[in-house]
Structure formats: structure tokens, C-alpha cells
Image (cartoon, rainbow, N blue to C red; front, side, top):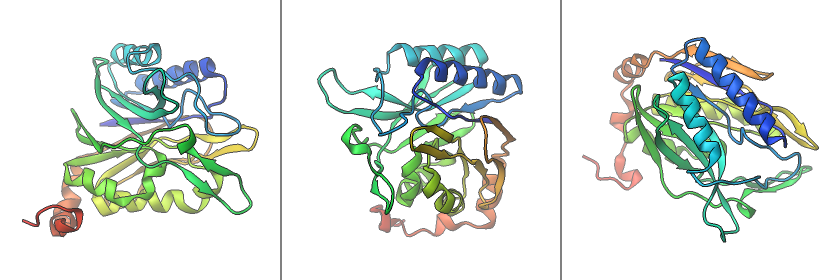
Length: 274
């Protein structure tokens, strides 16, 4: 399976972001990508604060536009996240990843479970929960490549989510992100490698990069990590496409060599230990 991960520097110009995302998807498809993945908040990033812009329902024009693009290009396409309307009178929105198949049909929808509410010493206070409603469902999607676990950015800090996905058959983990510059420098690589190696999965993480305006900046470093925990491809800076031929049989080889998932005490996850 050939993957094309897209790194962007989205801004407050929504239409420009969408047009740029489309162009990068076309570039990835022209290079033979079977799976193309966009980062978190690819359609809009505020220069200050976390409030989303122009949320839409799943049957809105943005989702239809990119479903049509997946169908035209005959690719599997992940919209890393978009703001999804909950209801007309609900004060918050979901931060939602949408996974299309080659026919442009929605195959899975994941709503970000863990919300980024932090206060870093010497830095701004960030509270996603002021505008975002947390999702409540772990999502593992069926695809022609096998089962795919979906998550978003801050989720990467919570290993139990990925263990549930691996126990549910996931061999590929998709983690669209917009890690901050400060946390990314110290934590991004080690967290991505840990989630891949402890679950013996490939991990693909398209990312936001660079200055978005104001004090808002993202770390970048779009990554592909193999089941042994090695970074096999990386785009540190700049916008563009990171390509890699993902050999999913490597998952089976590593799991046969190191059967850690079989050794897991499943009662620790609230499952019966068979």
C-alpha cells in the first residue's frame, strides 16, 4: 500500500486551505498513493485560540466536496479533522476525522476523545473543551488494507486507546495531528514510536507545520513509524507530501517474532483473560 501523508500550514483562510489540500491530494494521487491522509484542522487554524470555524454536519458541502475528490482520484482519503456540527442549538462541535473509500463513501467517522486542556508554564492556557465536545467511541475502520485505527493528535498520549484498537484487529494507526511547537520538540517522536512498537502496528501521522499567525505554531515532522518502532519516513518542515510504500506484511512478521499482543493480560483492559 502506497501512502501519501500531507503536511500543511493551515491558516484562517478557509477556502485557500481547502484548495491547497485538494491540490496536495491530487499530487499524492498522481504519484500512485492508495491512501492519502490530511492533518488535523486542515480546513482552518486560528492564529489565536482554539475555536473552530464554520462547522458543518456530515452531509454538508465540505464533506461532499472531499468525498467527490476521493471518488475522482480513486483513493482512500482521511480528512484529518473538521469541525462537525452536533445540533443547531448545541454550543460545542465535534473535532471529527472522516475516512473515505475509493468510491467516495464514508467508511468511518471518529470524534476526538481526548481534548487538549493544558496550561504550560510561561505559555498560554489552551482549553479545547470550551468549544469541542469529546467523542465517546473507539473507531477501527475496515479497509482494503485491513483494519485501521483512527485517532487525533492529543489522543497519542493515551496508550489504552491504541491497545483497544490493536486488540480489535488494527494493523495500521492513523494519527492526524497539530502538535504544538513546544510539546512536539520533546514528545512527538517518542509518543509516536511508543504507540507503534507497543501495538506492533504501522503508525502514520500527517501533521500541521509552521507559523499559523499570531502565537500559534505547529511542530510538523509528519511521520511513518514501522511496527518495530523505527521512523522509516519523515517530513520535518515545509508543506507537501510524504510518500512511503507501506508493507503491511511487516506487521505479521514482527508479531510472529515478538508476540507481545498475545502475552497481554487482557483483564487489565477489563476483558476476560482467555
